[in-house]
Length: 240
Length: 295
Ligand SMILES: Nc1ncnc2c1ncn2[C@@H]1O[C@H](COP(=O)(O)OP(=O)(O)O)[C@@H](O)[C@H]1O
Ligand SMILES: [Mg+2]
Image 1 (cartoon, rainbow over the protein chains, first blue to last red):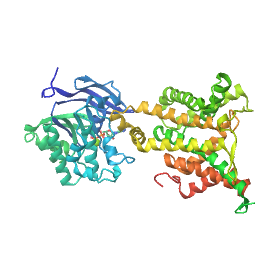
Image 2: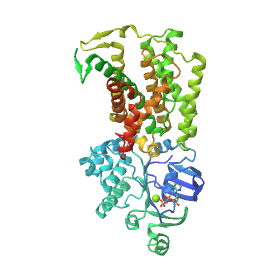
Image 3: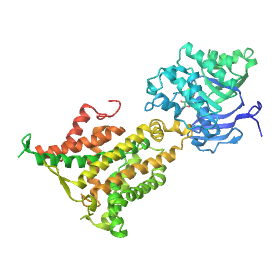
Image 4: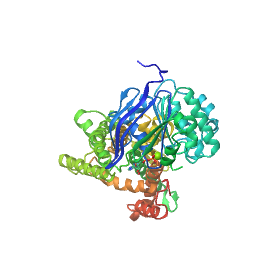
């Protein structure tokens, strides 16, 4: 048995993952792990396969082979709608706010997956804008507010493993700053986070480790304390 | 004699009522089509056949098992809805991942098979279904005679339409349906059993068609082709209202029934084509339909 505070327990362990959209072979043998309470990023250029990695974990791709252990459970044959119930929350790159639902309906939509999710009060405390606009149509919100909503939505479900895809994309610096604070808070609560990012300056201070992706493969793993020594590799793959 | 725009009042109101009754059927059927299309993205071409099955289910329940109209009102939609569940689960689901045009073809083929089978069994002449005792007769309203059963059709259809609208727009389950209509993959990622939702939605839409069939049994003759004739008009109604809008389906259905009825009063020769004329005009002016998005 593992306790919730066991920091060496691997909440997510992916081995030799291959993923396909129809005939196109996108991921070529991914190996990665995220330990309990860790914040790990997937860095890489556009099209390197980071979103596909998250979608593969959610079983939202055409076909996948290999092994994906979530919370110690093999999920390579698990149905898509059973994955969230293992305590996984997914925040898609396009945010996925529903236009036919208002803000509060969007917030309350995903079924709870664990009993200890954040309450509506805690959510509104963390994202005051959402309280003000809770009766607005979801897609009428600003980009930043929509991103807050997409995050808040999965925090309410009690998900303990968060898969976040480019949450800072196209947002103003103040909002990016706010998101960094939110992530710090979630980390201090012990949540496990796999974060896809373009914005390295956003990711570097808050992440424990980074995986660099290129052409559907992981080409490098960089710990926080190696950032300086591996700066050149980073520059090569990110084209900074 | 009272006249309305140069027509005897009784004739005017009589046609208005007939129009409202037709409109009630259009609304029920196009509502079912809209619900199904929303989540499955399939234009359910067997909708007319399923409406016919509802009428036949009521007819057979009565003539074979002696089960009366009131029980049939619930049982027939349930039975035909369950058939819909099987159709989705074992046929439509298999082709859900390929182009939706195949779903249309499949349901079209199914409609032909069902209608052909029933023609083979029962012939084309049609059978009568008695108006239930409680709803026989009529009321003289002074300006017109109102057959109770016809009023009943309109009331039931309106109540059901409102109930479905309320369920879809105001409840949690309806929220799942609306969200699933927009992005079913994400709903699945949130842990919602979308395949089950799809199956139940199809069964529900089919059940609505069957309910229309039960309501129709005492006023139209129960015959294998009763649905195919109606469905063509209902498709025109759906095009006019715009695909995918729940409110649009209901209101357009009622409105087109009334338009048709009034045309019978003022220019009977056009009453069979007036809905199609409206459809052409709407397509030219507002291609996404009166209530459609993106127009
Ligand atoms: N639905 C899809 N169908 C086919 N190919 C896709 C699909 N989504 C992404 N791809 C391809 O997969 C590759 C990886 O894309 P993606 O995972 O979105 O990259 P990233 O998130 O790192 O920008 C790209 O070449 C992209 O064109
Ligand atoms: Mg991406």
